[in-house]
Length: 229
Image 1 (cartoon, rainbow, N blue to C red):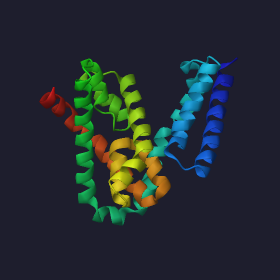
Image 2 (tube, rainbow, N blue to C red):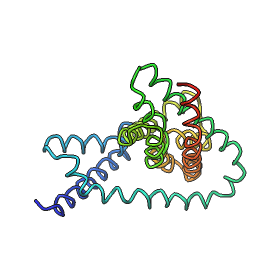
Image 3 (tube, helix red, strand yellow):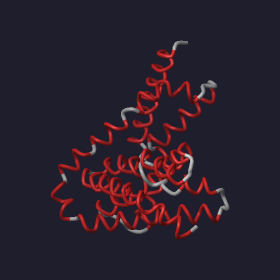
Image 4 (tube, rainbow, N blue to C red):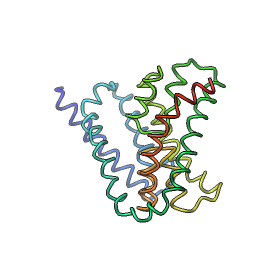
């Protein structure tokens, strides 16, 4: 089978899985039916059943991966539409994101140290709550493994999105601003996409929190490692 054919099947298969899981999620609105979670499980199962390597799948998967950049840039549009509200809420959003970034880094360090894992795993885990390119750069600068950092980012994104309804309900977080700050600073682009499903305001706040969190974590990660470890 040619590389083009493998790539074509990868793209078509991924889109079919996404559309099926999206239709299911619209009918059964549960955290475990989120397309990014359920779809990932289905794709992994198909690859294992048919003994398809990750490298083969990414021949086409890389085409979809290239759309991540434009998708993130597209978030600027709702951000622009909500600019007046965001200007008024700049201070609480800024401090909320700062708190989320600090907690994300500290919990990563502490949990890793309690587990007695190697230092390179700690360095890979620290930037788990920021978007993948930034996380990989931070991990690499501290001596972590970039591919491992990417895995932790995926886990944090999906895990945070799945658990967020329970956390919001437990702590009675009903306002779009609070939800947006929490999702953006803890679950980056995955959480932001989920926030955008609920409301444009929540998604816009989550976008701001995601960007600010990436900047803050880039600065505080080395300092936190020096202070705690």
